[in-house]
Each structure stands twice: as C-alpha cells, then as structure tokens.
View 1 (tube, rainbow, N blue to C red):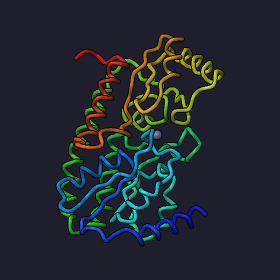
View 2: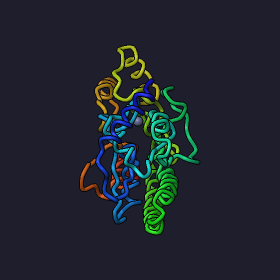
View 3: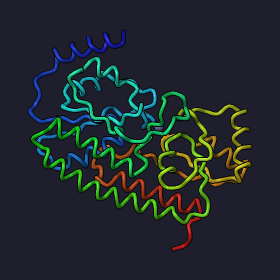
View 4: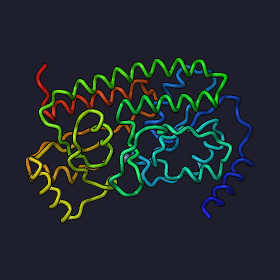
Length: 295
Ligand SMILES: [Zn+2]
C-alpha cells in the first residue's frame, strides 16, 4: 500500500518537476554519511552533495521519508546510506526507484547486535574510526561507479581522507590506553562500536529508544545498577534530554558528561574535519571522565 502510494507520488513529482541542470547529485541519508561524502566529493566540479531532511534527533530511528526526500532521490545519481538497518525505509526506496544506485557504507563491516530489538544489528558503526575508514572505501566505490568521469578525483579524495582517519584512529587508541577506569553508562546505544575499538566497556545503556522517558521502576533499577558498578560516569548526548542522567547523578553522586555521536552539526560552512573534530572532543571528555594520567 505504502509502496504504491510512493510510486504514485513519485510519478506525480516527475511529471511536474522541470528539467534539471546538468550537475550531478549525490544524496546522503543522514549527517555522518553526509560528512564522509563531503570529503569524498570535495572540489569535484558539477557535483552537488545533498543530505535528506534531518530528523529531530539526528539518528534515523523510525524516520519516514518526506515528499521532499523522495523528490531529492528521484533526481539523485547515487544514494549513499549507512546501512546496517539505520535506514528502515530503504526497501521503499528500492521499490519506488529501482534504477537508483545505492552505496551501502556498512558493507563488510563487522556488526554488533542491537540492544533495542528494533533491528537485528546496532547501526552506529561510524563511531569507530576504523569502521569510518571502511565506510569511506565503500562509499568511494559507489561514487566512482556512479560518476565514472570523476573517479580519479574521488580516489584522490578517498586516499587523503583515509590518511587523516587512520591518524585519528591511532590517536583515539593511544589516548584511551592509559585511563584508570573503563566502564561507561550511556543513554542511547550509540557507543558500543567506539567502546569495542578503544577498549572501553559500555556497562549499561539506559534509554532503549532514543529520548524515551524512564518509568519510576526503570529509574530505580538504573540507580541500583549504577551503584553496583561503583558509580561509573554517565554519558548523555547533546541530541537527547538528560533528565534520567541528572536524576541518577543526584542519587548516586556519579558524574555526568556529554559525548557527541556526530549525528547533528552545522548545516552550512561545514568544516571537512567535522567528524574528526567531534571525535577528538569526545576523546578529551573521556580522558577527563575516566581518569587519564597527566601528560
Ligand atoms: Zn541512534
């Protein structure tokens, strides 16, 4: 039913959309993929990178495509996605636009199970810089296939970006090698890949669904868990309310810090290093929260 409606909507859009300029269009599903694509497409002549309408929370959990999104996809030369279940609407896109090339950044990435039960796998793969490198390789391959005339420049952008991400990965590994404690408690299941890559332990993930409020019983259980773990630091995210964290902190004396999963950011004048900048800021927060040795 929904597929038929999408197809009808799309047909109507195509009828009434005027002929477009010759420029090629790369569409990305959400902010982390947009950041990778901006780097891969940097200085490509006649190529525009368009991000779909950002959801309120930054992550795509339960997001549906808008008419504007479908219009952007109908005009796209290639659609770059995170994969691993992040874009729950993807089958509708395949049905409505069977000719549209789709590049899946998660291809070949080792996936962790999801804690939410919504999807089989945890889709927050980009928070491991090593995974981000695999994602860049996958997206570059999809871009080069879709825009063969630009393949050489895309490959050069890819290699330059991979060198930066490799340096970031080494810096994160080194920066967290000497911390005094390794347990963290987070409020959205965004950080398991980061924790696995850099030797931390996600001792508890509080809100199963981003932004969900906790019942009094869940809150009481969380306070109990937090105490039993020896009050490890609590990490909230700028995209989500931190009421539960503040309550647990008030009850247990645990410290509250903020980690940014990089699902939102500036919409214009975006620094190409934005992902690296956010990851380095997260590293500094973690070193403080987990008790790194003084330099
Ligand atoms: Zn998420």
